[in-house]
Amino acid sequence: MTINGNACNEITAPGFASSAEPGRPRLPYKVVLLGVPPDADVSLDIAAAEARMSHESYTACPTAQTVVKQLDDGSSTRDTLAWAPDAAVYTTNAFYPNQIARVVDLGFMRSQRIVRVELTPFQVNPVTGEMRYTPQAQLHIHFRGQTASGQTVAEPADFEAIYQTMLANYDTARN
Image (cartoon, rainbow, N blue to C red; front, side, top):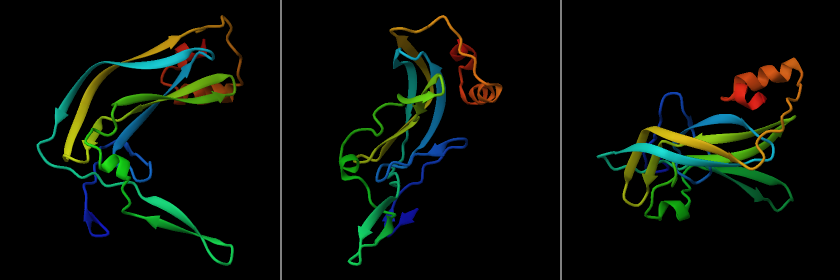
């Protein structure tokens, strides 16, 4: 693919979304939502992962950036920069992202604390053009500190139905 005269590779995978951090390599990722104890510290360990290296060279396309410009009359305009790679990433001789999974604390939805586990099985080294793919990994999510109150909060049926469809660990999180 060519964007504004710059050649890059569009890396996609069926069933995965594309990352959207402006200027960073646009790579496939998946999100798993988990219900976690309200006061627990949450961490993730990658227990086992089998990575495969590509034999081709890749320049991952950067995610477009939107720039807001102030005009002389006080108004503003938005301009999308299709080719605007983040120099901090594209000039670093390291795999991006540096982990195949991470935990992001989202906060609470009513009484349920929710975290998202971001899975990024594709990693690229923008300097060398190498791409690494991890088709399988074993992850351990740890809850430390206060992990159970002994009480189940009664939520309206509509919210229980939402939790049941969005949380990968609904039965455990309910307690």
